[in-house]
Image (cartoon, rainbow, N blue to C red):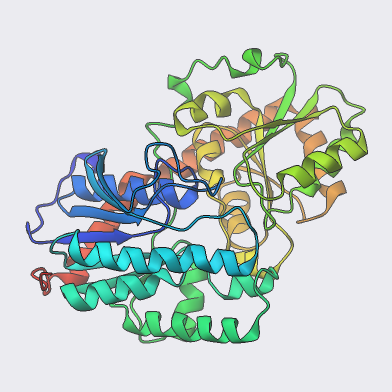
Length: 429
């Protein structure tokens, strides 16, 4: 039986407000994940409303059509979306970053209290951690229950990546983090590593795993007749290895540029760097310094064009820096590639390795930040087209069975009903 078609009957009064700084039309992992979850939960009988910022990520410029507005309301795929003003700047200083975060803390608090109507479940996406203050206050005023969704352990990750070094700020952030955990009726995490970390620190908390996943009906290789390879001048026998996503510090993408230099004596091997981010200019400069001609840079691909692009490649390269912090990380780009029957070259240790390399046999693993090890995997794929096919077939089966967004949303809807069945008539603002 198709679980997408099973529609449980929940009380009309079960109303969920998702508070997040990031939401479509922005592109990115949290944006896609939250929107896909919202649409499916509404299908399953929960009235979902989203409170978010004017779209600006990752360019840090307000998108056309949303500029010079303090408040804006729209409907996206049946979801009511309330948007509040946010301060944006292209500066990378910690002061400007905090202004960005806290401006939305205050405007979301105001809009959430006066514009979003009665709600009885308030779900906050973190990071940014500070947004939890706004969501918690909205919950206090409106009543109901508080769900705190953790997609990254902040401030721990910011400290270990060296993004925040001010001890006072780190201490205050940790106090806020623990306050929000204690205040939450339910804590949700995107990886099992996050769930285990929080459960160990808060043994009395109700902590639930909401894995990321994929829309297997949208990312379906059988439905795509891709022209991307030919349109971009690549030959049918080129081995196209792609990284698509944020080009940031955590990914350690220098390894791809350096690997390209090692294998450039094999001209049919081509690397695609698809996306934007703060490290892109540095990578372009490194690529030029090494004299590579086998690395091709592209801007972000909109979601509507993603299946066409993914269908054209042979495999995806998914690296992270070699930090213990990332042993619990599962990069979201894994799911779309596997659903499109594309194997992965995974430079991530821990949970992602256990799931997708050991259990799912969906790709090849290389040691994070080890250039020669990545080159070994690249040549292994180059020399064995049958291996590419077998790994791709394993991948699509694995994500369809274990990471189908339809099942994830239905399971979380059931969890909300079970957790909050005695509180479906929370206070009204």
